[in-house]
Amino acid sequence: MKYKFNIWVEPDSEDIIFRNIDVVEAGISFIFWENYELDINRMPEEVLRRTEFNERNQLDISSLIKLFRSSVKPESNIIDIIFLSKDIYYKDKDYIFAATHIPSKTIVISLYRLSRTYDLKGFIDENTLRTRVFKEILHELGHLLGLDHCSDEKCVMSFSPNLRALDEKLPFFCRVCVDKLKDMGYKVFTSDEGII
Image 1 (tube, rainbow, N blue to C red):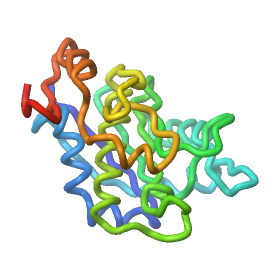
Image 2: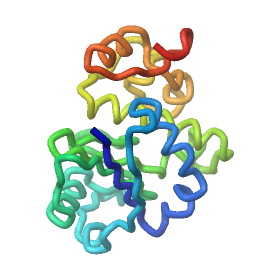
Image 3: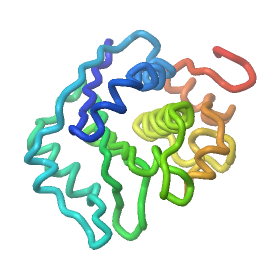
Image 4: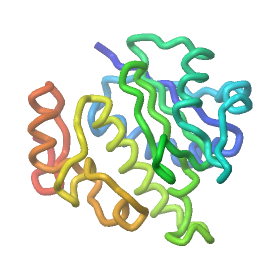
């Protein structure tokens, strides 16, 4: 079975994603190898217009996914990855880098914090941004496939409460997570063994 990925960009995230589409594809092929198709689409404007914001001007991720799913009808064989330039939050969390809605196979990744310095006052270099985006793609695809947060702080599936923690973890799955993915029929890279 060939997996189909729809990448959704908004006008403010479009340039970053087009410059780094190879990173997006690398994250997808890390798990799905070459067994996928990729399309890039413009995010429906009405979804962004109607999504709820909080007092900190952050997008409510639940509202966004609900509106997106009603605008773009989910198809069982398609995984949607949305890239936003806006900051996002979920329920009582001050912010999140990304989120996955498993039933609809929808992943949302915010570039707002991923593109900034730890104090959020400046922008980071392109290589650091590329690494952060790659890690978030792997992390959210891991959730989509059924992996929970990992207790190994170096594993890409570990929870990142801040940018420093995100930068310190490796862009690989740990042995425990690899074994879980292997049990599901996926072959992935590990930091110490290459392809397994």
